[in-house]
Image (cartoon, rainbow, N blue to C red; front, top):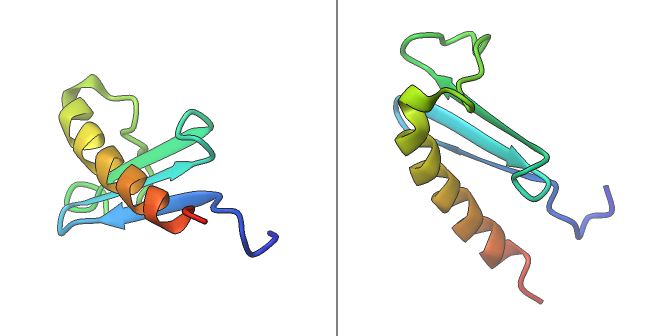
Length: 70
């Protein structure tokens, strides 16, 4: 860590926790806190929750854009 580079961002709702690492292609994690509070099943590639992932990814990217502005 260099203190200037944003390596990952996570957002959380009452039900979901979502994180992206790198440019979003490097890795993503999506957990359903109601169904699996131990966060053992990553749902990021599950087509059944693609809409949730897209919505939370937008929040992550908006936040990351604000944090990386010069």
